[in-house]
Length: 593
Image (cartoon, rainbow, N blue to C red; front, side):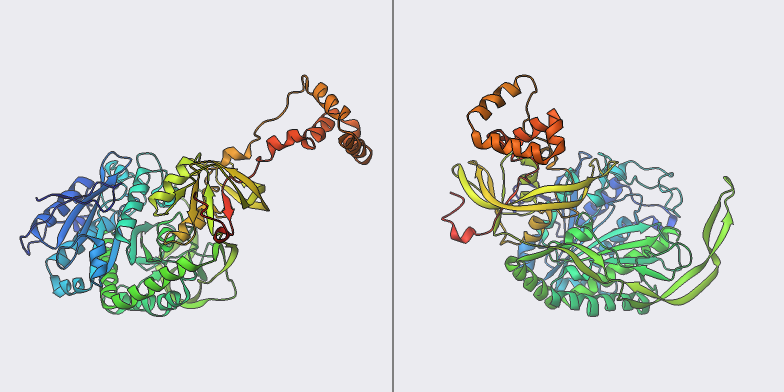
């Protein structure tokens, strides 16, 4: 296999293979026998395709927590593996991510089958490559894929062995896309920057419902898109994909079944995707995002075939509509550069819905065979079809006006690192500088009582905004809000964001007091201060006369004095969110210097 080194992303190691040989022979897969590819088998499979076809290139893209590189397989008509060149030629890029939860492996096998069929020109499929390149992550969660057992997801109908849900660091990677605690997620972010995909698909299995459908679909929350892009997504792209799955593939698909009440399904709700999910992350970069969720109770070959069918239809649609997809993304990217207001939280609109033809099973009560408890189940001997409501509209609940730039102190290294990985352009102050900035004080918040992803998640944040002068130090970072990464920057740096750095505890240390006083010897210093400051003494006496607690409680007196003397200046940073908001950068003479 020929190898070459790319230098497009200095932070990534990119090792490529390219062959000139053509062969229509298809490598063998085992999903029809209820078996899934192991990670080692999947990589050998793609290495074989790389050797066989000049259109195929297999790359190694950064390190994962498992100590193994994350692979990326690119298929293009002329073998071009530089995404910049692919886009320059007017072609769209589809990125397919598999095995984020290796216990849900049908995408691993379906993507391998699709790649082989496409390269072998099955049913004339190579025509899609005239206007579309396909990029595949064979297995994302390598650590979970290496931990195989027949007992993972024990209620799942195949395959015989499955991988573990969490990665080597015991992280659920589908909650790690923006906080990026894992090497896996940081490598994925590098891939996303490298490819800048126009369409994104993440493949999964769901055990959260039971019905007659094999394939359910989560699509990017349309309201997150710019208006013209949203209309195209709702009225053209989604309708065509659902129609093609039903008519061309004979495999009717339904939106992800997230029901409003347990029991018989009368309505389902759209998926409100936080930015830490894969499709929430892709939406930050104006990609059309999808997540397939095949039903856990269906036989494994059916789930693989359903995923394969959707991949085929998605690539077909992207190829046929590549010009419009690229135009809409270009326009969305342009608007992102100019946007001033950003929605960082949404709420469901319960006044709007679409009617949906739903094929379900009757819900009945039963007694469980071991514990004897009462439970419900969906009776497969009693199928039905009814029209139900699908609530898939959302309204903004928290909107912020972005500053001209954020200022992130040098001390917050992990924040700076993640901003950089996600393409944020920054520059550092050349000198210590006093700047007038808009600041937040955290008035209240609610920390989680139990850890999620190793973090005690902060929510229900209430803020107080103060414009003040803050001294910044040489090396602190100016992060302009005029770039392609604006959505990521605002989502992560605003403390009210449900997915931001504050929510994930990156800034929690600032919530603690910076200093305090010791009771021993403190009063003698206060007496000296009061003897030389008549105004302070007068205010102190007034406070005692007006507040019974201050009048009778010695501790309250000391606290009052501490907070109303110059000593309190030491504490003015307590609960002061460390990221400043520069609102009038245009009036400054080069704030970076």
